[in-house]
Image (cartoon, rainbow, N blue to C red):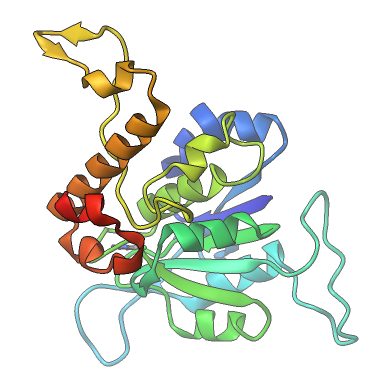
Length: 260
Ligand code: 6GU
């Protein structure tokens, strides 16, 4: 998978060299480049923002550097309709553009899974009050564009949102995680425990500060363990995410679940 990130703060992405993602990059599973938007400015001050038309607070990112950046990273098809020659090891085909903004559609585990199956993603990090709307409008003419939000709160810019999304997406790329089960077990993973939060986990020692690990987990009774884990997941979902619990399919709850 190819990832291109466009930002005025490339330093934000240093953590992508470490841990899981660093390893995936070294293994060649993920090919990532971070681009400084200011490379595509032409004035002495490398200006990327200006005052908003119609008035209002703050600044808006100018369209010209964004247009040039996207043309350079994902060259538009030429007049013959043939995709332009792409330099170096770039993924071929058409990328999907993701624009983080609190006004976007919600980022979910399902969307992360969808992105993980794409060969090429471009992330456009806005700052200030956002990017001139014509940039997304024009890009839609030649690639799929999603404006995506992490939730109902406001970050100072898209960089941290992109770190979050890249981590969620890359761990779903085949080969990135050692143990594939740790993906299928996740809270929000599609499957049997769908829409239940993950329950508590324990490791050695069996007693720590007078607190024993729940006995059932040491019993070796796999049926009882599965039953207990489901109870715990259900309790946690009701406590922390009542709106998720309310949406559980009544058909999928057995008599035992109802007592929980
Ligand atoms: Cl994706 N971007 C910004 N700037 N703020 C956010 C967000 C994204 N999601 C929630 N708040």
